[in-house]
Image 1 (tube, rainbow, N blue to C red):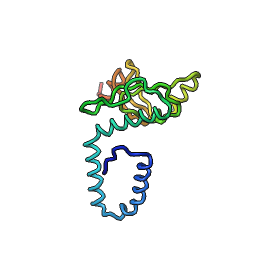
Image 2: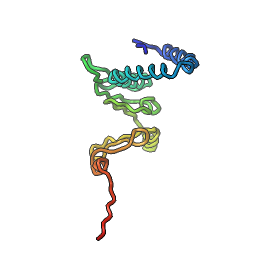
Image 3: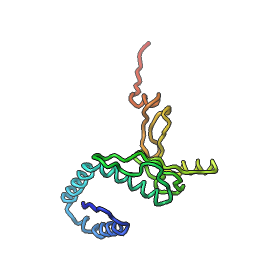
Image 4: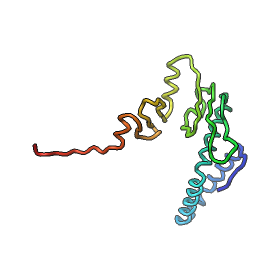
Length: 169
């Protein structure tokens, strides 16, 4: 794996092209060597998971701004150690912006303005993800956001195992 400091779209396309061209060679590589390569890649990704997560948040924020959103607050990593990303609000995000179709595992709030309630409902439902943000509601994912709940009655049920017990009365 290599690190690219300031890659461009062309760099990314070149990398994808190189990966495609290498596919035949990869298939011809002995399985044990492929497994070792994948293991090492996994180790690097796990070791750098926090840095990768912050980078993904930064890229989502940058793409929302490039697509017409306005960063109201935050929008960058603080100048200090760690993998934090400032809480960010992005206003006037277009309804079709890529940030709206991706789960953001960071404190980023994209704001989409609407005039017709039907549009807002359609946009909210036009995703394969879904998380609840009401503190009074049981929290958990739906669709591709995972299963399970925490909080409220439903959350407690996640920690229980239903058992049937029959007795002779």
